[in-house]
Length: 257
Ligand code: NAD
Image 1 (cartoon, protein in one colour):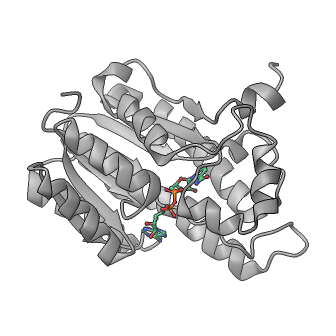
Image 2 (cartoon, rainbow, N blue to C red):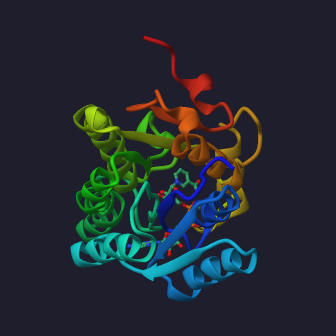
């Protein structure tokens, strides 16, 4: 077991990366607090875990709302006595998100509220709980678009993920002496609902695939495996890093300084 009796809160646990991570963490001995806006999806995730004999609860929450974030952390502590791993993973990619000239203010605000403010609020309420537990692991989902210009315009999404990456570095430095590690995961394009809805034609999918050296989309399970490393003691000297899981995109396009 790589997460024995660790209490792990995962946002966006109703689908994609969040659900796969919840299932994987539970199979490694964790107590899972599965959080999502979509109640039926997240209750299903918790049920899938409980059906295996492991222990999970679900919380319906909107990560852009302070009271919801306060509640999800309080619930984790009430139900399982502590919080050891906080995975701020929930995110959105809106089809109306485009270039700077054409993107509506409302699309910008909504994307930043969920993807960036949502991570901030997860930290605001999650970090005190990690402190009370004597330390822990904070993991934030960024994206490869935080590291390089995307081929498809999505200005608000890209800005939100750049913010997540910068914020994670600061958190890592500030909380290092409190035994709290903070790391980001930068997934490449994945075959999850979020991206497949955005790349809604075969032509758009093929255009993205051209840029991936492996020639395929990644799977949510492959990101869950990276999250497991960052959550577990195997990464005990790893903080402030970005774990890139992108099928080789960064290697193909970013030259070392
Ligand atoms: P997904 O759409 O399969 O899952 C996202 C989940 O987040 C959904 O269950 C949704 O209901 C939930 N959610 C959305 N808004 C929420 C809110 N306000 N409060 C709580 N929950 C909310 O997507 P995914 O691909 O698993 O994405 C997970 C994370 O990975 C996101 O942060 C996304 O930006 C990031 N990411 C995805 C890709 C990709 O290609 N899919 C690439 C890089 C990064």
